[in-house]
Amino acid sequence: MKTKSSPAGGDISLVYSVRLPLSTSTVNHVVSLIRAHRKKIRSRWRTLSDGRIAVIVLAHLRNDERLADLAGGASVSVSTVRRWVLEVIGLLAARAPRLDRALAKVAKDSGCLVLLDGTLIRTRRRTGQANRKNYSGKHKAHGLLFLALTDAKGRLLWISSARRGACSEITAARYEKLCARLREFELGAIADLGFVGLDDGESEQPAVITGFKASGGKRLSSPKKVVNRLISSLRAPVEHGFASLKTFRILTKVRMHPRHATALVRALLVLTRHQVAR
Image (cartoon, rainbow, N blue to C red; front, side):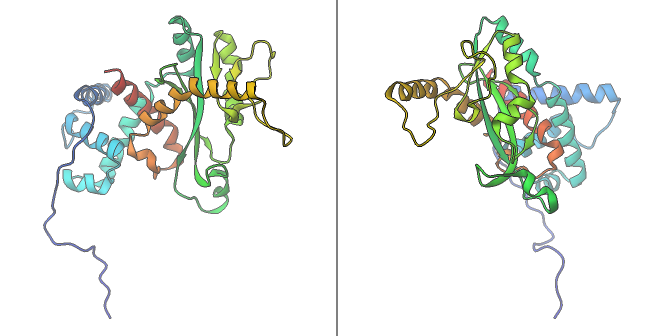
């Protein structure tokens, strides 16, 4: 019995159109970045125009279109599309705000409070010894942990670098030295119960405000429950910020190498801020 190694399908390639739910200003922003980068590196010619390259990259990021499908529709190789995607991700990630600049802007705008939370971006299961490092026992899935800061309205301000999925949110916050940075700019942060014990400063002026957690089998008193409900209502907009970020379907499950995850999420942060602020 002979086996057929070639993929199923005829000799004719069918191409279909898919709506890209992004604004024209967002596409033009990416086009301007590509054009400026080409001028900087003196790239005089490419197979497709800057506009088509931007649309292909945004289709991959927003709709999670496969690279092979995009390459086939544009009559280019998969490696070419992958190079375009990594190039645009790098250009966008370079414009993501750093932690100190984000906090300085909040302080300059007469703000006194930010919202802190973490999220797990799921990845493919890794093999060998690297398997358990990216496994989150909290979410029962493999992924990478990211922390984010938003303002009181849920607009994303900053996203941390990727941490392995087995890392807890409070440990990731200690790596970033969030408490010291918040005190430096005289700001406070509201966080959920996953950050209880993060602030090791004076209890009279905590940099990170969290609710109360029941311990020792004892129930919380009524005043503490009221405080928890109040904090939950105040930090609700941070979930809206993550929801806006995750409209980019490539974050459903990141299939690229984990070393590109930080640049990818920060690039999507720039696109989200541009899309929301338009």
